[in-house]
Length: 91
Image (cartoon, rainbow, N blue to C red; front, top):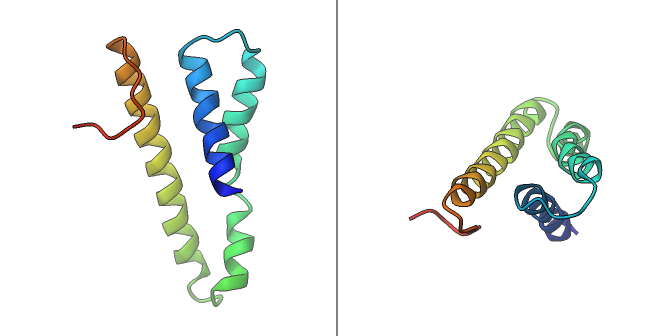
């Protein structure tokens, strides 16, 4: 399920960048919902970690979310400027 959500997020970003004939409000709703997905993570992590370290675990997860989003978005924007869209790693 997590992979499907990730694919949906990347597809929405690609559709925005490539200006595909899809309503932009739908694409931005998908992007926004992915950003809001970090909100319930504190509750979910509290079930797996003790109360003393639940905040630290949530902070680590949020850093992971933000870094992955920034990395993917930056790669897509930079590659779209060159005319070739590459989703893989930057070399």
